[in-house]
Length: 167
Length: 167
DNA sequence: GCTGAAATTCTGGAGTG
DNA sequence: CACTCCAGAATTTCAGC
Image (tube, rainbow over all chains, first blue to last red; front, side, top):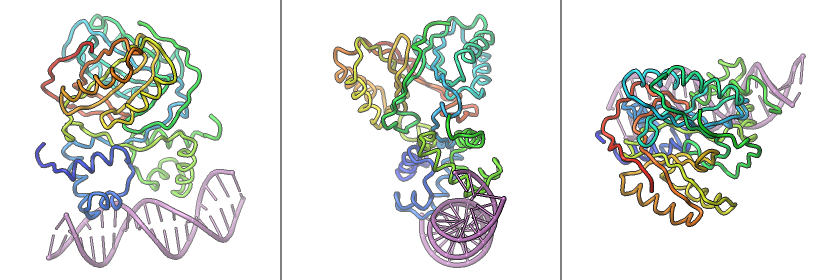
């Protein structure tokens, strides 16, 4: 990677686990002044190395009790697919949306208030993709050991309806 | 959710998309003084609503060129499985590790320097789980529309070897 | 990338409803 | 009990080197 040195990489690694660390503390860790760290951060953000900052939130506190992954098997490809996916990625319910290789071509991780809301989301997805979609394989995420680089210390989440299947 | 009001939820929603927002600006958004926001933040962290803060980083800048998801099909269940999974979750390569319902029981999202490193990781996984593991289905993640609530504006990531399959 | 000073933010305690 | 206000401390920011 051009214009990136080991100190930049160390900054990225630290920031990934401690997103709200101060510039002062960050400078202490990589032996740089706070001002220099800030300059590097601006460079890294401009380069696109840092896409943004996020807090890892327990979805239940936002009354989103259902968390699911969906794997989309497509029948055809094309630029219009990406356009549709971008639209769904912008949705309030979607946490992550990826293009993948493998048996399926799209992976979505999303949260919903309940199963009904999830079903409606899946229906919209099917409707938007139309003939391009073969099927959706899905399942609920009922426990998280690590999420977005943040480890989860002994979460014990009880009831999960063990629902899953094809849509 | 007990002890949580709409302002708390709004704070969580904002923080999820702007992890490094200042308390002052956050207070401006929800009509609260910075001190009150700080008190609420401490409460939310203590309650476990906020698990941590993270920056969304382009893995290529950390020389991790291979990004994959793995779906683990287990033959048996048991507490020792969770112990093993926690060990792998702590790994430097793993971004997220979930327990899920559906055809497979575990989902891992991870990054590697190259395919070799990924293969070694999978081998360790198979070795640790032993007879408890049926198979690993996997694929590469070659494009991200949204990641950890951070939308990706028009990323164009080129070459991906279209490798995938079973391990 | 550093320094140093100014602006901003953060923090903890006292006070208010 | 949650919030605000306020002053001191820390951090951030920006200029110039």
